[in-house]
Image (cartoon, rainbow, N blue to C red):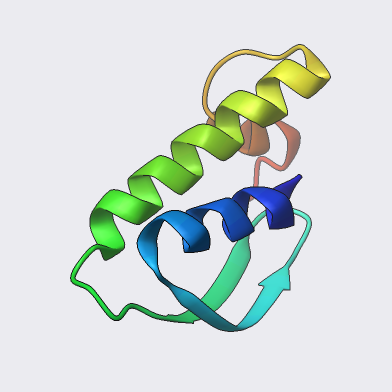
Amino acid sequence: MFLSTLEEACQQTGWRVHAYVLMSNHYHVLLETPEANLVAGMKWFQGTYTQRFNAMFRCRGHLIKRRNRLWPGY
């Protein structure tokens, strides 16, 4: 779901992903932004991914809040 949402964001924004690392509690993306739309695109991407994740796992709220409860050291 993460990658399909990222692909959708790229189609909407024109981003080009050169590399990514998906970890258990965060991610890194190396991307090229031909237009000045990084902030708007990331807002859409993270918000949409959170909504989809929450719907799939029947959760509510921010993913970061949930992560902090699961791994208190972060």
